[in-house]
Length: 93
Image (cartoon, rainbow, N blue to C red; front, side):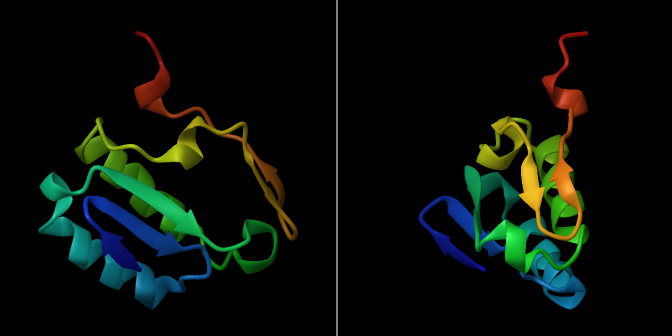
């Protein structure tokens, strides 16, 4: 994990302990973060779904947060196949 200006970059190969550390880091700084990018090759390095849960929680807490992953068609993982999602914040209710 590293932050460059107002963009946070997290690694897809983060394990659960690292995701907990990232969550603690973000908790106090969410107002200053404008976007989140993922680092790593998802097909090979995906470790835990906790990273996606954290990203969703961040997006719910700050809807203006730019997370390019959520505007993609899906994520192709070697072990799990293609993950597709439709997040609540993308619906026009």
